[in-house]
Length: 508
View 1: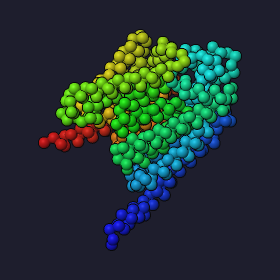
View 2 (view 1 turned 60 degrees about the horizontal axis):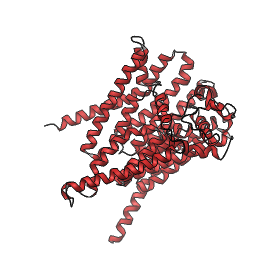
View 3 (view 1 turned 135 degrees about the vertical axis):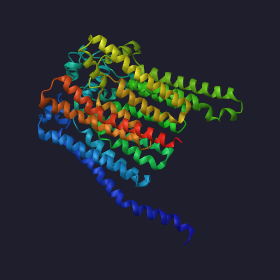
View 4 (view 1 turned 180 degrees about the horizontal axis):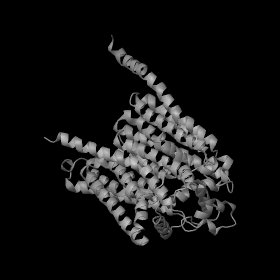
């Protein structure tokens, strides 16, 4: 056989062998899309766009609706995990278009679902209107300052006297959603949903590019880990949380790292932090990784034409450029108010809330033994201390091996969510899923998937279970925290045990 025909024949054989798996991947995608469409039809956004309600009220706490919620999400997770397994058996160039097609359809379907587990989407619109219609700073002025504005009531009585807890840049990002629609709340909600869809799809594309920089065959799996994740679809698009916007920027920083565009890494993380402050946790890791890798951009210290002095010049140039770009981001983010004090005050106010987290459970248990303020002080010291130790370890790892930065970012965010997040919300897991998507499929992916399932399972307890059992809140909170975090803790312990066994087997 002629040599020129052999590559073509090999490609044809690969196509023939992957065809059945492509059909199966389509079926897996249908398991994700089908329930998404069903949820959007059962809880339509436009039909309830002028009322504040939730899934419990819309479902009348009925057992059949409970079965629909659990069964629908169960099917989505089955399709998600199955699709991830199938992607290993299909060439990336054939799997990527299908993964994105399913992701687009699922995202568009969830965009029409009412935000049944949180009213944040309404509050985004309210606070955006504070800025666009009243010219006030949402970080400093609460909704109840404008009682004559009919949209202000959609902040709810609970949040009407609270200022925005988000970064100043989010005010500018969300502004167009109300600037062009005025008091038309349904259109404002749809605009915010469109922003969430674009941000989520961009995040999937960026994750694919990050993975492809290391191994082109990982691109489809990376996109699928993020775009097909039921929690990302439910919370990021269905409930419209701005975490997908923040993580799109954080993923851009990781893409800059993967492609060695080092000067953009920290400024892009600053953009993410200016939307939601949690991204600040990744800045120390990025700074250490960049500082250590900077000389390698021109060669190792010994290979640099001017020795160690050139290595220091490379580091200082990178630090100066990153600082200037980051300063420019902050100048834009704080425009037009430049009220840093208001931003600090809003962060401090959020730091006092403890809810549905291991820290909140610990505080509740200590209330019976010590004064409330003492309990909060002890738990705060313990949680921040544990996170500080974990961050220090991650910094040492990155100092020794800068290439470990993406994995260290995942582990840091994992520890932040588990130990140092007082007011835990399931949509915060979008951060973890996005970072897991950038890594090879393995234990981090398993932890992200298991915790996503646990986070969504928590709603079944907090909505239906609480209504049916009439348990007191401390009991519901304890069971809910165990339901949400117990499985991922077990998986993490299993990962640690496997690592220990592996090291012992290598010991002579």
